[in-house]
Amino acid sequence: MNALEGTKAPAFSLNGSDGKTHTLADYQGKYLVIYFYPKDNTPGCTKESCGFRDLNNAFTDHQTVVLGVSKDSLESHDKFIADFNLPFVLLSDPDTTMMAEYRAWGEKVLYGKKSIGCIRSTVIIDPEGTIIKHWKRVPKAETHPEKVFEFIQSL
Image (cartoon, rainbow, N blue to C red; front, side):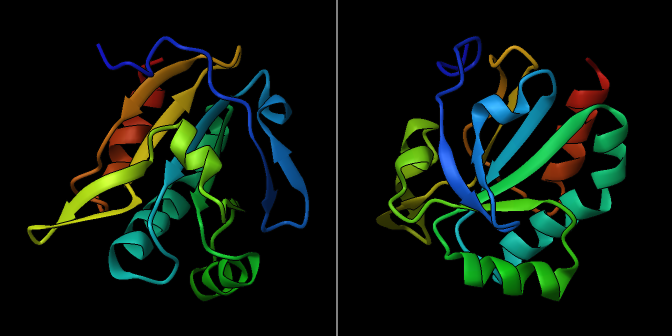
C-alpha cells in the first residue's frame, strides 16, 4: 500500500489564484483532488490542466473540488488560467512546503538527468480529510485527469 493512502492529509495554507488563502479545512465535507504540476504554460502541465478543466463540471457533479498546485507565482497562475480558461483555483507554493509534505517535491529523473523539483503527482482526499488515493508519479499528463475522474466515479 502507498504510504500516503489511508493517512490524514497534511494541513496547508496557501494563497490561491482567486485572491483567497486556502486551507485543508476549507474543503471538509467534500472530496478534494489536488494535482501537483511542475510549471504553468508548459506542454505537459497545460495538457493535464486542460484535462481537469474539461472534466470540471463532472467533478463538481460528484461533490469534488479540483485544485492545482505549483511553485509558480500568483501572477503566473493568472496568465495560465486566462490562457486556457481554467475554472478552478491554482495554489502557489513558492517555498515548496506543501509539495514536500505531499511527497510532490524531491529527486526526479528527466531524460536521464537527476534533479530536485516538482514530481507530477495527485492525491484525492475524502470528506473527512483522509488521503484515499495517491498517484506518486503521473506518467501521462494528458490522460491522467480521466483516470482521476474514474476513481471518483467508483466511490
